[in-house]
Image (cartoon, rainbow over the protein chains, first blue to last red):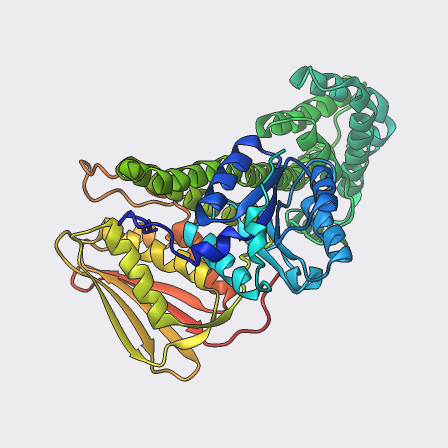
Length: 152
Length: 380
């Protein structure tokens, strides 16, 4: 249970490239949503947050996101249903399922680019996942950086 | 009239008194349960009367079999089982269940005596058989009742454990952010993160425990890994939290195999932290990885110090058994729910391995975990 960051080093992993990454994060708990958004932004990405799957679907209609990250248990449509819905239109979409349970099974059956992150993850786990996805994403166009990020 | 016949003939009056008594036990039980209570009770009485009429051998066999708790979809809905489930779900407690059967006994005997029955030479035999039948019904009811209460409690604990993860995740992520955004708060942030990690370990233990109590067993996803590297990382982690305590790692042979790293992390951490807690101060803890065997890799954790008392040894892997802390003035907070070894065993079993312990004054305490290198597909 050693805590990384004891040396107070800034988080390194490909920061410039990560700044171009857009994440849609869905979580119904207000405090958790706020905290995770801050954490994701610390790593570099631009984050848009939604309170539930229905709101997230509306946001997805307006623009695309590199990563869709969602809590599994949501009011209304569940996170897994939402993930399936997203993957139907875009099977290559990167999706991260956040779960209070361990190892949601059958991730591969949902899509090739589906991963899970346990609730209460360590920073290294998040960084490693972002690095993995970053490497797999197609090269970014520079003009993306100029788009103003919006918040609900 | 023989007692068995009296019971069958007097079901109504017996029921009236029995149900009235049951309602005094749990006055707040909703009225719509009355019909269920009566149906259960009637079935139990009929069953008791039937028992009493059986020849002696059959009776004994039945009594024995009803004391056993059967599982699985083919369980018949015996009157005692149905009764037990209804009582558990109506909020009865164990002593109330027992009181009910005591009242049944008293009611039947009283009504029989005041029915104008004349003493016969069969009476002693009848009353004896009646008591045996009631005892058998009580034993069966109690077993199902307790199993149901246990199941409900484990479900509750499971839900609680799961729900605790969200606020815990909030504390951790917010503090991780703070550590990054305001490095000047590093000292306090690390204290919060360590405590949160500790809580998360407790919640993990709680969930593992309830899952295994509900019969689901430990979930493992084996992947290729090197046990020696894994052991080194885990030991380094623990040294970082417990500086000043010597922990040695000895490796020999080929330590490759298919295991679930995060689950084994739980096992090794539990064992090493135990060794630190109960080991003699200023003596080293030794972790050894032996990969010289062809099919099995052996992981050992050893500490010197007072041996585990023999009376605890038998129950060591049972949940909620904790040894007395070696030093009463030890300021370290109690780090476990007493589930560590229980869960360690569940995880090792899920890998088709074994875990054992030896402990003596001269040799100290040694936990030995034998892990087959390869496993059949993961249990879900």
